[in-house]
Image (cartoon, rainbow, N blue to C red; front, side, top):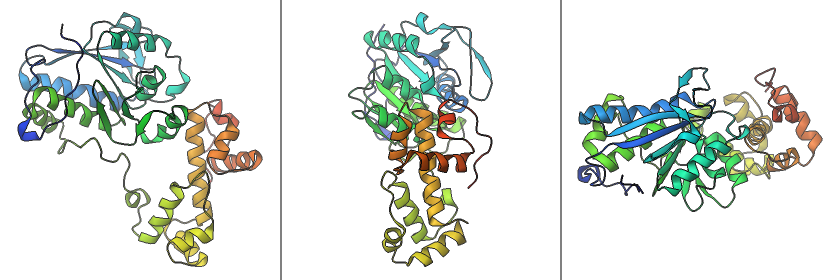
Length: 345
């Protein structure tokens, strides 16, 4: 069987043609499901392959599902999926795709790491959707490769793997590695892979069947534009919030923020109260605390380091602010205890 699949660079749509190495045989794909995996990311990754088979009238791809216990795996939405076998039984696949989801860093992935390393040694292409990138990084399979991950998990992954080339793109395809942000970005990534291997006509057919009007490029942003997220269009307010989000470890003062948009601090205060219903200071604090919560949930960073990363110079101040915002102290968040409230902002 032809191994060492490397995905070629994308061509203009009108010039794409099927790869000679994959034109006459099915590509085998193993989906490695991690407990509490994201159902939408998994579905968005596997359905394009099924539809590609339908477009060709034959099996372009043959796929199967695998889990740690070899019987089933439960998605983050509670749905159980039956699988073909254990991670340790996986062999002779052209491609393996790790499907991650919630609390990815809290599970023991040793069996999965071993299976991925064996597949890599045999020349398999290896990819991930959603937080599956975390698993590849921990296994040492992204060293020297570009990668991406869901925006919520990006700070945590960067803090643990400072030397890695981790971006915030929608998806990344780098030689025989491919990663994506999760959600519907998995569909865009798989459509891009289908186009590279089997041509634009197959990929276009699949996109149409998915009611996916446009195959997004890899470098497109993951998150909504700030204007859409906040539901406001005031340019000066948007600029200030952007400055807040980019200055967490060393928070800017009220005067600095106001000066950046040529307003007085009183004018800036009125602007925030009118459009966001809270003062600049409270909004800034909320942004910093949400970043802290992401780091606590996704990394093993000491709580004091998390506090400093988010602009707090005192552990007691950080703990009190966290409790006031989320209804529990940072230590309870680290232990995985559910918050009693959605926040008190």
